[in-house]
Length: 68
Image (cartoon, rainbow, N blue to C red; front, side):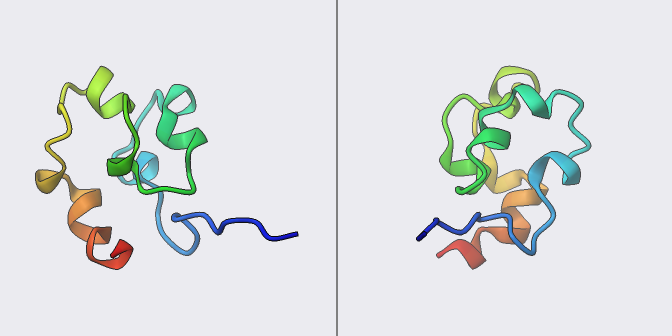
């Protein structure tokens, strides 16, 4: 079986880094094979109102370079 490795393997997930209380309803939680900034309609957009200003996000700052 050839499964795609999760982006979050060996990393602290965005929902833990941001202490997100609604993560279980977030597409990022279910789409964990990708970094959160590559997923549309995350709870950061919906609840936190960040509108994908990821360059200011602690998660993006920590992991964006490692996803290249």
